[in-house]
Image 1 (cartoon, helix red, strand yellow):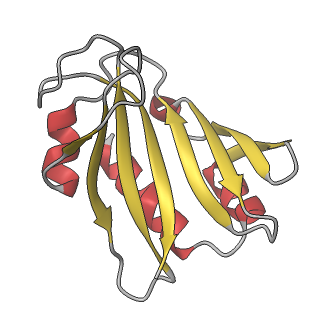
Image 2: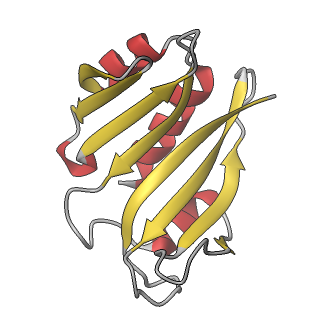
Length: 139
């Protein structure tokens, strides 16, 4: 699973067109003015939501994992490095973790990796990840 996420982060860092990236990732359907909903070619990833800027450059990919328990924080930590908990907006917000960005040499952007845990889940390496966000950051 982590290999798929790392590959997707690399694709996002190198992409120049949200439409092309969406079609690379699976079966894409336009969503709103600049985004796409994608049924991933990889069943383990579930549904993807791809957001783009008004020029069609991809900004982020949200990965809704299809089953609870498909990914643990420890797997992301081993792949991307130590995590930091992001302060909650509200006490009813689920815990969110940030990992060091993916910096691929020669790519026009880096990619930050965020994990959302289930509401009420204790924050630890053993926690189950509910969703991921891969955010593209220009250099």
